[in-house]
Image (cartoon, rainbow, N blue to C red; front, top):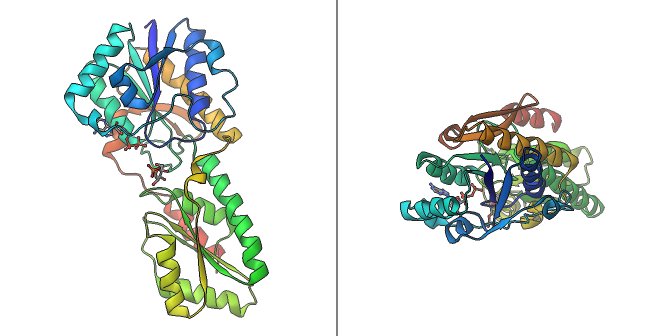
Length: 319
Ligand code: ADP
Ligand code: F6P
């Protein structure tokens, strides 16, 4: 291959820029040109392309968001949009594509691969919900953002002896809520992967109050129910004022952590290696500290599940 393309798709994630930089630098190291595609699959369909030289990815490793912008483009599920995208790439002499995104974006990449255009996926999402990889780019940064926010809420919760419900993103996955709750020492954590018991949550609150605890923090993943809903249910049952805080899109922004930058560098380089070996339809991941590649289909045909042992641990540590 002499020319490849790279795009970012779906919800953005901190570290996507570092991954774009790694793709460009690794490809240039091998003498291969890289075309940046703006606005994900929408730009692929419209031919919104720009050649990325070494300098074009300078000064972005520390920046959140994505230099190439992102889009949700549901039309890309249709055959004619995919065919047009392939025509656009072939017209520019592009021979392979790196897709940075979540499992939805991987479906688009597989469709293109099955139509004869080799694609490799890099997992970029704060949700950490891509099957086949232990971590996704952006998860660590979002986790640290959430923990910092919980710590701040805890300060005021302690001063005023308040109980807070904090709603955390993650779509259908509980990873962000679970890890953040563990790291911040939350009293209770609710995730979509596990049944919750309101009576147990309330008795935890009561035990804490009896021990003289001045605050309580309950973390709820957005996939379980909205934070305000949980707060009013608990308020009704306990008769105690319970405040809700929805962290929202701040969780998706910010400068990537060192861990996310290094992960992005390793995965970006691996994706280029896989493409240059002529292997399309692959996803890049990390397993037991090693960067691996596997069948792209595995990433969306299987279902991600948060680590249940961490859930058990969280209960043991917040008795
Ligand atoms: P994520 O990649 O973060 O999971 P989405 O599920 O929104 O985000 O998917 C991102 C984009 O991937 C969609 O807007 C669409 O352009 C493309 N896409 C999703 N599903 C498919 C599919 N089945 N076939 C082709 N393209 C798809
Ligand atoms: O996939 C990342 C994510 O931030 C999810 O955690 C969240 O459910 C979703 O995207 C929100 O998407 P949007 O910004 O399109 O509302």
